[in-house]
Image 1 (cartoon, rainbow, N blue to C red):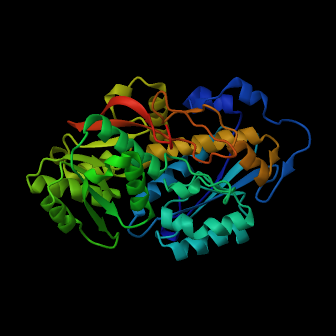
Image 2: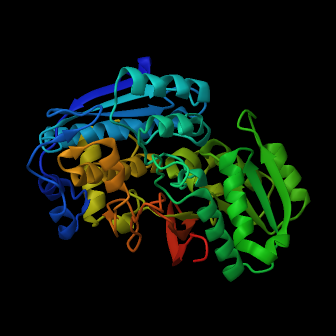
Image 3: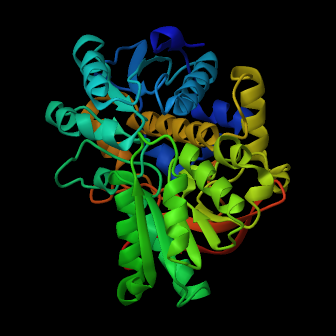
Amino acid sequence: MGRSSAGKTELMMDFREMVMKCSRYGAFVVISSMIATVAVGGDAKYGTGVSDKEIKIGNVAPYSGPASAYSAGAKTQAAYFRMINRQGGVKGRQLTFLSYDDAFSPPKTVEQTRRLVEQDDVFILFGSVGTATNSAVHKYLNGKKVPQAFVASGATKWNDPAQYPWTMGWQPDYQSEGRVYAKYLLREQAGKKVGVLFQNDDYGKDILKGLKQGLGNSSGVIVSEQSYDISEPTIDGHVVRMKAANPEVIISITTPKFGAQSIKKIAELGWKPIHIVSFISSSIGAAIRPAGLENAQGILTSTFMKDATDPRWKDDKAVKDFTAFMNEYYPDGDKTDASVFYSYGVAQALIYVLELCGNDLTRENFMRQAESIRDLEVDVLLPGIRVNTSARRHQPIDQLQMQRFAGDRWELFGEIYDGDVGR
């Protein structure tokens, strides 16, 4: 599918009416009143990267380097667009998906993003991966008035339309995730001492900030904070030092590699704290299996997505559609990798916004439509969780539900928490 050796996935694709797509793959529920508002007919209005036959979409992802596992997301999106294109195109227009390798290095991200904008003339940047990497091009894309759409990072900074009106996140932001853990602790584990292991960057600090915000006057329960750098080969020493503080609850704010290490090391120490891992370290394929299923029993996390491998969803049409999609369009992909299912859902939402644009495919109208999403159901989301945006809200999702690992799968429990401030 892609030219991964060159760090590039370039696909020419097509797409028909959304209703035809939904009838086969159940992409998402489309509210009829929204469809009625789509501009159709009349003179088409195009911006950079769009013509009667084509829409160019740019993406930057780590096909190499320490975070290369996340390239599965871009590969999923490329496959999804190929599926959509074979069904006819966005009102007859093909999608050209250009995805370049940045090796998870911010200077390389700048280089590749400038290439996409200034040489390839893409319409938008979509789903690019990482906090530090997207931060490196945040001001550049807003200065150029190029949509930085559905960023694959939960950094809170993507939800700042007053300063950065051309940027929009997707998943619950990291501070929202931290506030949800605080709500759970206050409700279910009140008064217990907490230790926090966190990545020493915007990602780790964001969740920690949200946790402390949520705990409020109870933030004194945090008795140990251990930060680590992504360049460290192992975090075992940090876990040992954490144990010395004797917390009853551990929160691991890590990427999958280090999340797996924390789970495994805690088990090796014979330690039995309540262990919460951050959402991005909850992938069964990328974190739990490498840690050992036996070591992960009883750990907790939060999620906003279904688990496509969980038998509870075996009769769910959306999951069946995902499985059919993977079998036909991405057979080498790992269905147990949460980033694959995540990326499948984000691609659906992008197509939804492009459909809302109708024949006004300018960057300005793209952002207007991206800001007009109301109670959208996307296949990957848990029942009851909806996508909502506005000109003042560039965080499409802020709801999460807790889950516990048991046997070989996650089990949801409790209510859906709102991670937004004041809710």
